[in-house]
Image (cartoon, rainbow, N blue to C red):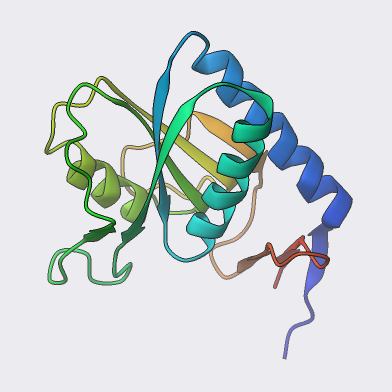
Length: 167
């Protein structure tokens, strides 16, 4: 079994998240309301953490939602959002995932969100692997990595053992 390499230890992961939170505050300066959608499962954990920190630092009214998408079969399996929002129309939306690899998950999630006339859609990921097969990018990125397709990035956001690994 291949050994995993620690790319970022807990302190560095926390610093990346904190920097992204401040970038969100800058990008959404003057907004009163922000919709945050986390892609399950690790994207949701990251999004919840970002929401908590934003609430501590700024005066956004934040509405949070989980987006569940079957990453290997996004067309044949319905995308689910919970709780079901009354409307995203006219709102600024921040879509969050832990790792952006081929872009498939993020682009299908964006397509789902853009079925309503949102005011804007911003994407965020903790790790951008830059292996695009779909025309999408993250607007806010924690770390960009040049990896091989065979390598696997593991994000652990459990309290006390946060880290990003390469396997």
